[in-house]
Amino acid sequence: MTYVTPFLTRVVLKNYKSIAASGVDLRALTFLVGPNGSGKSNFLDALRFTSDSLRSSLDNALRERGGIAEVRRRSGGHPTHFGIRLEFQLPSAMGHYAFKIGARPQGGYEVQTEECVILGPEGASFLVIAGEVREFELGGTRNGIAPPAALKDRLYLVNVSGVPKFRPVYDALSRMGFYSLNPDRIRDFQAPDSGELLVRDGSNLTSVLRQLSIRDEARKKRIEEYLSSIVPGVSGVDVKDVPPKATLEFRQEVAGSSDPWRFFAGNMSDGTVRALGILVALFQSQDSAALSVPLVGIEEPEVALHPAAVGALLDALREASQSTQVIVTTHSPDLLDSADIECELLLAVHAEKGTTQIAPVDEASREAVRKGLYTPGELLRLDQLRPDIKLFGPKSPKQLDLFDGAGL
Ligand SMILES: Nc1ncnc2c1ncn2[C@@H]1O[C@H](COP(=O)(O)OP(=O)(O)OP(=O)(O)O)[C@@H](O)[C@H]1O
Ligand SMILES: [Mg+2]
Image 1: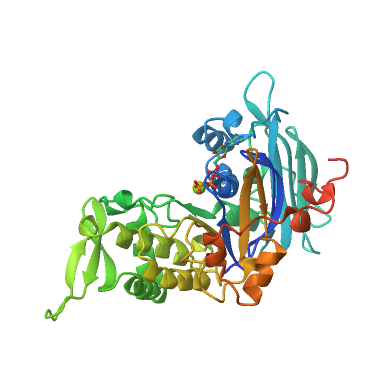
Image 2: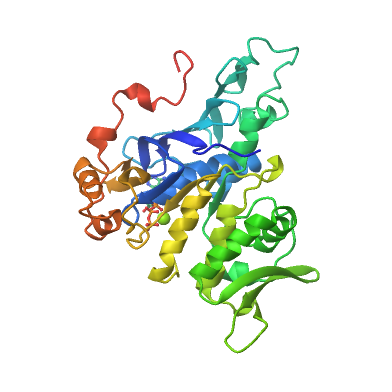
């Protein structure tokens, strides 16, 4: 299955880390820009939290982040819950998935409300409140399927992932990939896994690349083409078995030698292995349902790259975003220096007294870019990319609602 981009059309967050209440529309390619500590990674982490909770468990996702006290926003008002709403489009349907997790006074947490709505005549929906299934519709009828039981400390979407109507939603949300690549982990000899989804630090890159070489040679070639335009001289990369592990073997063209030299990952530069990690993250999605990836989020893809290589990185981000939604955080004016980057692709992030604001940039900046006076990169250098909350903020509180259900 190939996904339509953007997969996520809108994200609403409530009390997620530094984000008090935010609703933003996303494009096939979105750049998050803003000062250190403004909340860019927190925004991506909310999406990652959703896929982590679905792939492993809610308990695990919270524990990995230090518990609910660390995830819910700290503030004078002491919110005791946080919520996430993701509006999506799948090839067959549009809809949304939303949940609100609350801290319990006696300790621990519970799923206070969870709702999934798939629109259209073939639609389906469920609503669960505090462990009780209030609604469970499969296109007007239940087709004889009784709703599975709900548990207060689990996400119900996991329980219904065996119901065919909800399966595509579960698959897509649990197959979003988020990356903060670690060159050392990529250089390590890696234990093989199924290679279905690249993991956050790149530590199963060999397995993913192997899957790509077997199933989609053209995509692997594309990765190699981009790699050689980012890193001059490097012409390709293969997986080399070193039982029981595997590593990467790069081919490098050397003047005077008819055959390329071969280097193991352990001898390659930080920039080279990071660039490969980013390219594999971007182009890992394949047509087969089990291997398609609807969205990738990448933290600062420009790190360790020479400014001249950043143009090729931008081309790769753009090409990949035609089949996988791409969200990147960046501090790189070079990456945004291209005259044909529209401001519509940017989301500016700013922290106001510890509270994150996220929105498209203000009209003056957009106008300056439209008229060709500045590139977004130049505006970033001048610190002129600020979220325009007045213009793009919610027009009514309703736009920040997590749920559609009456009275929620
Ligand atoms: N539970 C929480 N409640 C309120 N604020 C929080 C919470 N957890 C983290 N923060 C704030 O979020 C900030 C970090 O935000 P984040 O990591 O998203 O920044 P960033 O924009 O990615 O910055 P950088 O560009 O440096 O990576 C912390 O400095 C902290 O102030
Ligand atoms: Mg960050």
